[in-house]
Amino acid sequence: MLDRVRTHGDFESWIVYYLKAIRDSALDAHTRAKEIEALENRLKNLIQESSHFMKMRETASLVLDYLFTQPVTGIAELSQKLGKAYNTISHILKQFVELSIVSENIIHKRNKLYRFELYLTLLEKDYL
Image (cartoon, rainbow, N blue to C red; front, side):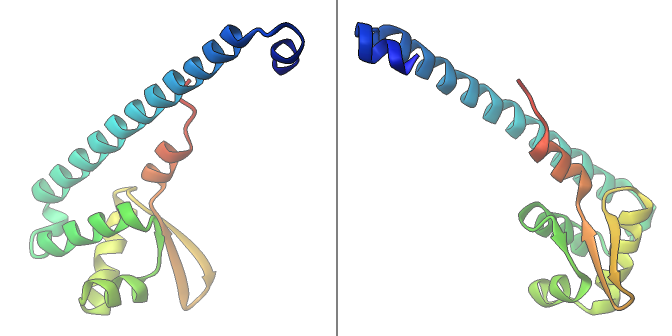
């Protein structure tokens, strides 16, 4: 296509190509954002309604918010960033694993990482 611009001055085809790419990128971003927003709303409702988080709904919501900014994290990092007790964060993440919100990735026995798979899947998904 670029060769036709050079040899035949076919700028219209090149402009159409770029406009289609811009349109496709915008549609992809819009669809992805809507799906992420729906996931966030669904998980926040789950936290509010689930008996798993009865005594720690606010902290569980903070953990969820943090996972949307840092989808792969450990207990110590979360505890430090949120200013919450290590055991509290550990308990919440165990509940998140049981509910399939995150998955446990054991590197060493003492250094578990938690992956927010639901979110990462949406980020990696092909929409077009």
